[in-house]
Image 1 (cartoon, one colour):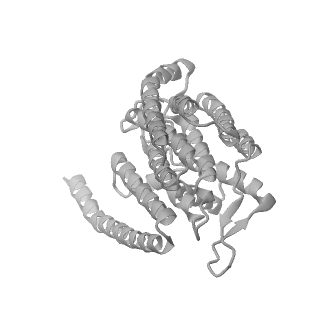
Image 2 (cartoon, helix red, strand yellow):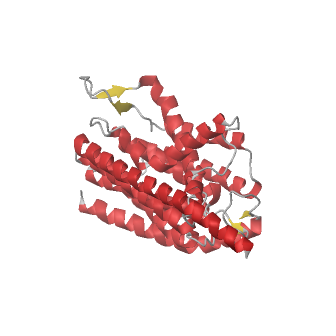
Image 3 (cartoon, one colour):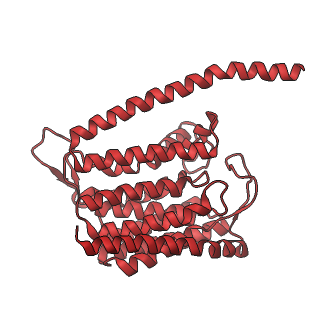
Length: 361
């Protein structure tokens, strides 16, 4: 990697982090003035007092400024920036007025269409059929709807996991860091610089969002992060032509993808609207197992980091090593989860007995 690229990368990271850190208090004051405040009204929300939203505006501003200063703005990057600006505008309105799901969804499709119109599409997928002579598949016209579906899905997936202090922005930071490592290893310098700007913006905001949060990033931040990560993955991760490398972006964004898929299936099975909010997300389930907010966020961070590590290994060190690593992690993780459930079930009768004894006293 060229030394000048490394310098730009570090500058993009630092500038974005500093700008996000310094601008967040200003955005917090703005949120109070315009009424962008999250008031806990139901059991899904874990906070007890009103907290300002709109923090994503600081992340967006830091990312855009750092990208304009240090990255090469070609046609595809221009499309991503225009689309993300549209996403942020709607996000700000949603944080103030709580917009309906359908108008937001339609705007997301338009924003994704802007990215596609600027030439950023999933044109090829590595062929999952290991017995085929074709290394990759040319999607042809299917690249357009598939790209829009991917961007809209990840945009909403990140928004879905934004339910605990520091969760979505931390998961996004870890996922972005994984993409950044891969971009460096495959010599995608300009994408690496842009990813560094996104990572820096997340890191600058995290201190204000960790439990107990002083400000939420709101839909403004969650949808923006999902949109940019999905779009940048198209420019980098989907262009790795090694066998089964199509799994790389799915691993890096595995937690949000699993959560949104599970949420939609769960709601459809109950006859509910797939976009109707409920209290059944991954972080809610971890808390229901007996962990507190900080522990739940830490567990999700760890899972995201593990999946990111698997993606890096898969993208750079060959498929067999990655499959062995993934298999080992799944085995250990499965045993760990089983032990936790067993412990919770074993402790439940004891807790009930203690409760009864207390009531009797």
